[in-house]
Image (cartoon, rainbow, N blue to C red; front, side):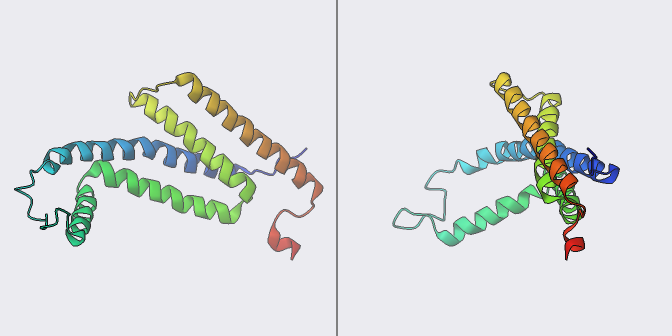
Length: 169
């Protein structure tokens, strides 16, 4: 049996998984810190809020404006936009990987590695898991699933002489 995953593809899978997985805990942490800072500002009394109309409801335009301003204010924080930009860079690499490699391998391997790197990064950042045994069992299931994908695609690849779709046309 020959493996048709090259060094370039393997490293691309690992890089995409690492970038996605390592940035997710930082995105979560940056967003949580931002929400904690904004929480005291949101506790206004009805008398102080100018956006309450006579019917007791909030103006839709004012609500949309506040939502947009809250989203834009997050961009001021390096802890939010830097992991976001890195994550988007991983997405660009992922799209390139999808174009160059087998789709049935790219998706599960990249996402499984992202899950693994996310769990490791969360652990190193000191985040606690409520049920670590369930997380370990889930990770084992993901690894078994990726192994099945690799084995099945390897067997299918051995049956076909041509690897790419463009070569078949």
